Image (cartoon, rainbow over all chains, first blue to last red; front, side, top):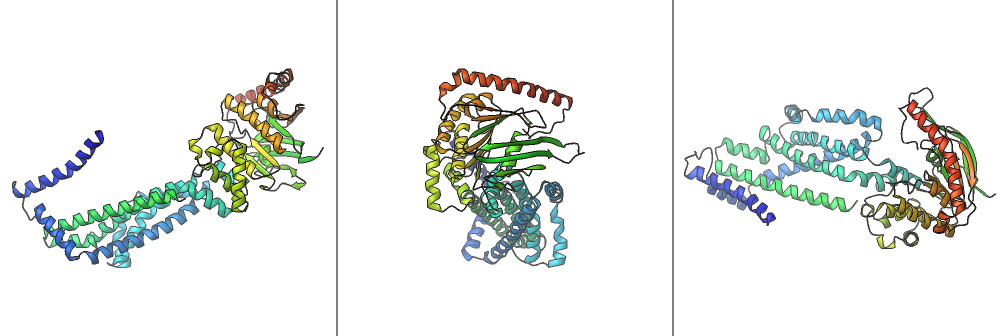
Length: 249
Length: 274
């Protein structure tokens, strides 16, 4: 019963928002230049999906995301592991990375645009930079806090360095690393779409800005809805992957 | 006496001399452990009994002295000769009991079919065969220590080093595990060094027990318990048991007092040396 009530509210809130949106544009006189009618937006979304015009921009954004995430996972886990190998290194690098991560790294975008141009490279660089930190920090936390008793036990049973890593350090650290990787994925997606809206030639973020500048409000809202759906799908995919990873280490 | 472990003039110091946190844990300790005997190390906390166990097992290099196991000088872990059972947290929580037992043998390159068979036998020996597919987190403390013991048994070493294996358990569980251990050991005839701070446990399990002095620890006296394994629960209520226990109590009492007064004189005692 309680569960039912929770679901009801979760569904009612977005429905109410759309209803308010509809009323605002049809009854309360909010300008259609600022806010399109939701019916028009839905029609535009249907058109976008039917024609497949989104494909090129989607491909650009997803490629940037995939490359940026691969770089930050590779570099974050490798460096995080190396930084976690002694309590001295943890004392040096953990606060250092935390401090850098607390800087708004989006400030690097103009620099990256200068270095790498307006194409995908500058978005990849920014996405990789921003998502590197949560991944490296969680890797340090994961490997740095393995119960010493377990390492001693494995050593006493003759574990080699490789076996110690594969059967003790990795499974101990994995849940923490995967949580960091998930966070890294989210911030990579955020920063890539965000930087596309600021300085780029293609991608979903760029498309939305382009439509906004052309005052094509229904299509702009259609694209926003589309990006929200893509983000939700990616999030579900990453959660599934995380659950799968937890079962197989 | 057929000697399994020969300990000669072992001293150990944590930290460097002159450092604020340097502690002399062990001082010039020598003795032999006979093949097939169960030797208990007992003493006040911080007396270096666990330190000595780690030195014997090759997990810690002593500052001075040497240890020979089966005629070989100990220079690092000797997984084919020595298996450990630790106090707690030594099982891998992401593996089932069976996988935990399996892993130790896997580290040593035992072939898969043999591992499965040895794991099964070890789990049956400790009475855990119905819990083989449980995770450590699903078991009681006593069962976890049985699992740790099964892992050590599956390695088929001649020597077993046990560092307060029942130290985190309640008195009743500890009593039952002690009885079961006595039965198990009578059957396997392993050489065992067993660290404890329970007087009853020492007298009940040991063929001999070595009483440590306060820090820096060294062996004050070695006492023989002339009672065959497996020991029956009635042994606990016998006059022989009570006498030995009282003797041990008298020996330990002074040393514990000394430890306490040393600690109150110097409150900044580094921990984790028990």
